[in-house]
Image (cartoon, rainbow, N blue to C red; front, side, top):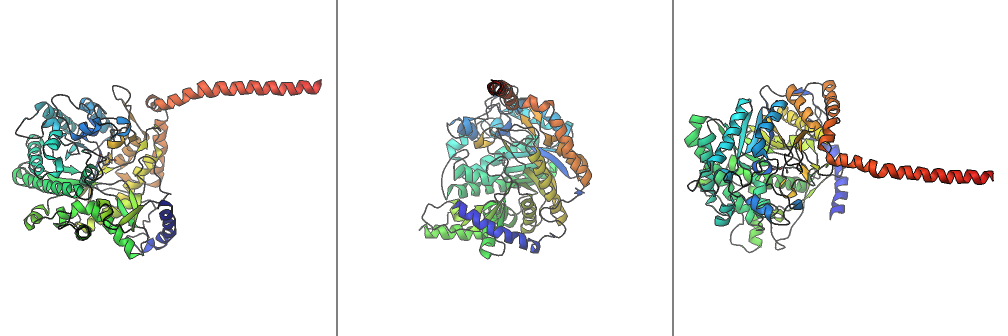
Length: 569
Ligand code: NOJ
């Protein structure tokens, strides 16, 4: 139960603190809490990110087909307050304005995704190519390049053409490998002369688990214990195929790179002296990032996944493991299909062992035999799952380095949200989050991790999937109630700008002045402009509080006067 877990956590936290000095890293110089002043290597790339369904809007414009998210968001009760991405930030129309925002921040790159059904409405290349959709991305890419912003393009950020879901069952079906390869090939053909960084899939863990296991995301299937593994299996094969297509047909001409973007939390053993906790934390990461990274870098699923899912499937009386198997040919075909690793990272968990007896409903989650805990002291300003734990980032980066042969890494997502209710443009918690996470990344670089770029998530507030518009990750605040979807800079824009222009953290005096300066700008007129609820609050103060206080004053004076008069009489 939760309270018991938390109590236990308090016990061991003391331990964690005592023994952390004996860890792998040089904590004597750069402890968890200490700040490291220094700068990034020249050429380090700074960017911000978005995705098609979350920002474009124009869901049925210029011949775009429907995606699984268009369909999912239409079902009542799936999304917070039944929001949809129908218009979202209207990015389809406002990309020029958005590029100005990027230019103003002096971003080196912009990470966005291509909506598959916008260019292939039925999902299939041999049916219909939507030239208007192609033109939109052409214009976007050209304008970025004109402004010296490198496009980093994701091919699949979750918006599968709905027809492929209906016809084939989406990622449950192996035929998707070829359909996705056709789509990717078309993108290489049309955009590859200008795009040099390709990401096949964004966060396949989420596609598999939330799309096919828990059903919180589109297509909303709840195929417990099997659906996620099957989807992941096909996604990994599709990724490998697309990498080979690029390698064989385009690389020599276009000279670009093809990677995948994996998202993972860091998992820290609750008690780092307890072997069972250490192994549980290892399983947590292997079932998260290792599930995808190990086949792609090392040629097969992590041994621990094969062991656990295999054993549990046996106990269930199944003839074969619920975790699919790669043939030897597939293994060697998949191994080494990553020119760079995209890394999305937001938060950390403490992990301890927990036995899930077989038969009580097997699932991806129970297969892992672990429990996740959080330290109640960790700040969690926005999304329920997102606690700010900067030191986990450095550990995750070092984990990637040692497990996968020190690959080239682009951080493709990192950031923090706020809840809809507090539309404060002076987002000091976000400035702190960026400052501390980016600093841990700098420490990781000093540890020898090969990080080449960093992408803040996200450029704009946008459609946060099942949470609708209620959680805002943007550097820019978007007023979704206004038809034109105006953007307003939060203080973190100023702050991030300073990090970029200094290429890191030059010295204490300067860095400490950044926050002050950023807050000066945000607390002026912008705040009032954007944050109607704040104006609303001020109106409330004048409309209710002022008259109430006045009435009370009058009453009190009357009572006081009465007492005075009585005394005299
Ligand atoms: C990862 C997803 O890729 C992105 O689309 C989402 O907005 C962020 N996580 C924040 O939850």
